[in-house]
Structures are given as C-alpha cells and as structure tokens.
Length: 410
Image (cartoon, rainbow, N blue to C red; front, side):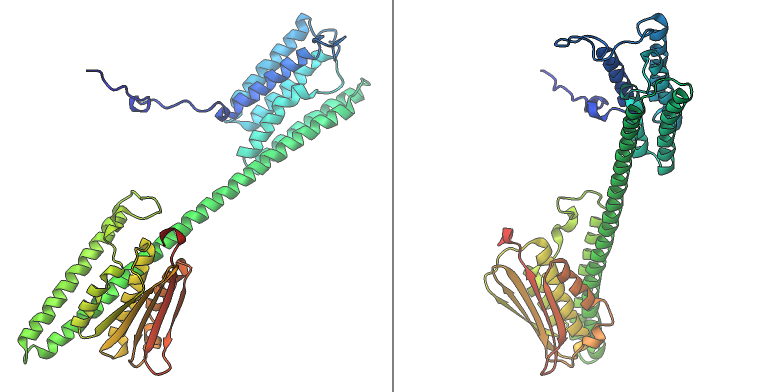
C-alpha cells in the first residue's frame, strides 16, 4: 500500500518567502553590487559604441584602485548587514563606502552609482524607523555630499557641483518615499485598530440587546404568572399550580437560551459573516405564535396577524424582527395596564413591516427610561430601516418598524 505523501507544512517546514520579501539589507547589498557593475560597464566600450561613455581613471585598473573598490565593497556589505539592527551605523558605513569607492574613479563628485545603496538604505530607514532616526540618516547623507564637494573645492580640484546636486536630490526623494510609506503604514494600522475597536463595541451592543430582550421578556412573564399564582393560591390552587408551572417553563427556557448564548460566545471559531456557530438556535418570526401563547397564558392576550407571502428572511432580519415584537409585547405586559395587544407582520417583496399596538394607558415615558426602545431603534438602524414608537391619538401605544430585505434573498 502506498503512503500518502505529506506536505512540507506537515513535516514542520515552511514554504519559502517570495523573493521580493527579502530583508532590507539584501536589497541594499544588491544596490551596491548593481552600482559597482554599472561603474565598470560605463568604462568599457560596449557594442555599438565607438568609445567608452566614461574614461577610466589612472588608478582604476591598478592594484591600488581595485583595493579601494574592494575595501568599499566590504564596508557596504557590512553596512547592509547592520541595517536592520543599527540603522545609523549602517548608513555611516554605506556613506564611507561611497566616498572610498569614488577615489579610484578620478571624478569630481560622488556618482549616483556609488550612492545608490545609500538611497536604498535611506528609504528603508525612513519607512521602518522613527522620524528622528530617519532625519538623522538623511542629514548624514547630505552632510557627506556637501563635505565631499567642499573638500575638493577648497583643495582647488575640479568639482562636479551640478552632478552632486542631482545625487543629493535622489537621496531626498528616497527619504520622502520612505517617509510616505511609513505614514501610510501607520495610518493603515490606525484604521485597523479603529475597525477592531468598533467591531468589539458592536458585538458588545449586540450581546447587550440580546440579553436585554431575552431576560426582560421572560422576567415580565414570570412576574405576571407569579402575581397570578399569589392571588389565587388560596381560592384556586389548581390555577396557581398552572401559573407556577408556566413560571418554571419560562425560567428553564430562559436559562437554556442564556446557556446557548454563552456557549456561542466561548467558541473562538467564526463562520463567514461574523456569526458564531452556536447561532443556529436563535429565534425568528416563525416563533411568534409561541411567544403569543406564552404571553397570553401570563394574562395578556396577543393577537398575531400576518399579511403577504411568508418567505425566508436573512437571519439578521428575522432575529431583529422577532426581538422587536418581543420587546414591544414585554412593554405592553409591564407598562400598558391592558389585557391585549395586536401584532401585525406584513411581508412585501422588498421590505418587512412590523406593527405592535395596544389600547392601554400609554407607556412611552415609562418604557423609555430603560433600554427597550433604544435597543429596538439600534437594531432597525443597523439594518438601515425606519423605526417609530409613540402614543396613539385615540389612546394606547404604537411601535412600528420597517426593515428592508436585501435583493439577493427576495
């Protein structure tokens, strides 16, 4: 029997990183080597040229000239090695290499080919290090260029001021590009932190709404049933037993719901869309009849009326609609002082409308002292719907919500 070959990850190894993710020191060393190759190429007669673009200096091919280039290369490679740990020391070595590599060229300035590694280093220092460190690095580079020109000018030697200004411009541009990359990365990090904080806040609010809607409704039903049992425990003990049975049932259902919610919160795995795996048992509009029966048994009759075709709804719309009805009925039970209310659920092609009305004494001021209306308004706002709640002209209270249904689920 042939064994199934194991992947490199299963053997404890990691796939190689892409070449463009090489450390900054590697890119700096490559830049120095590229500049060194270019320095030799422009001093050779290449195909199609009648003569070399730049004449080689007197000592360029002699042992002392090659020794200077070798020492400069050693300094550049050492600076590249230190770039990630000691950036300013690395820039200092690269600048020394640029000056030392210029000596056998017999030119009046530090050429761009010798300064290319410094430009690359300046970019990485500005992109990854603090603003103070990057400013010191670019100041060092410009000071070395100015010092090189000043030394030749004071010595009476030929000075390539224009060419050196162009080299200084490349150093400034490289530093500016690195600074821009640093600022972009810092801004992206701030956006990620804000997004994470907002996600945590939204999740806390969602949990608070769920707990409030679940517990407030259940406690309201339990209070009604317990009060009814207390009133008839002597005259009608069988009715008191029924009420206490409803209290027990409602308490167990509430505890089961809390356990499901806490279990879902403890699970670290999230499915697509940000919902926990344990959200499969969340209620919806299909449970309205059960809600109405439990509330009716507690002494407040709930009449449920459905209008339109009953089609599947997105989970977030279905849950929010149920919680809005549940909280509205709870407010009727606790504050309205009435024995009935009407719930109308109208499902259209592009939206879901909910209306809960009662003929009680009006409970907006009392209910508004808690979080019930605030939670309902937040739920509707998150789904980009409309919400209204207030006393009716003829007496009583009315809660209305309109929740849009996304086109993909119509």
